[in-house]
Image (cartoon, rainbow, N blue to C red; front, side):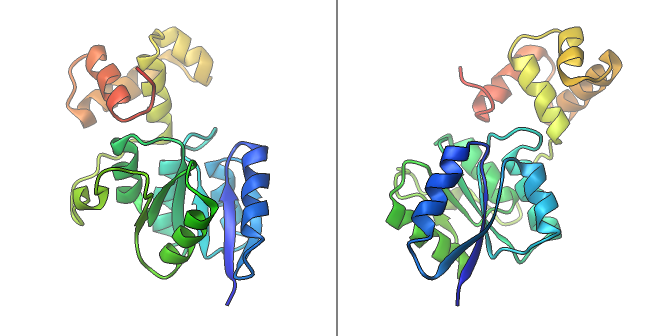
Length: 209
């Protein structure tokens, strides 16, 4: 049986490299490639892969947000995160969002193929390069703080030191909308000030310190 794959990555060279590697295995078939999380969601309405290889940092829709949508709307599609980020918060949030595996882009081609087949068969997979057993940190019923894609964008802008007017201009929204998103973020995260939001963004791996 052939395992049908979709690749979601905003770098064309990465897409081409992955497709070249995967086509060497006769059990794998790349049926679609997309450049961001929103395109992945849209494409799933047209075709149904068995495994979706998803990057995290992509435009329009963050990979973790896209993973959460896929898990809710297309539960038969197994999401395998393929990322350069080793930050434990990324990994935990991705798995809690519904990803079945997390693989580093520095992994070997043989591990990539093994990871695809593992998640296809219903098991979780975390990159061998990670030096900790991250699966032990995932409690099945643990609470997950839901942050929308727009809230994440506002949070990143705040962490970059932008003022409300600058955020509004960059995201093409009103200043009032920015203020609402900041208020909601503080309420959800139980954070009282902007410094706390910056620290949270760093801890979650949204920006580099």
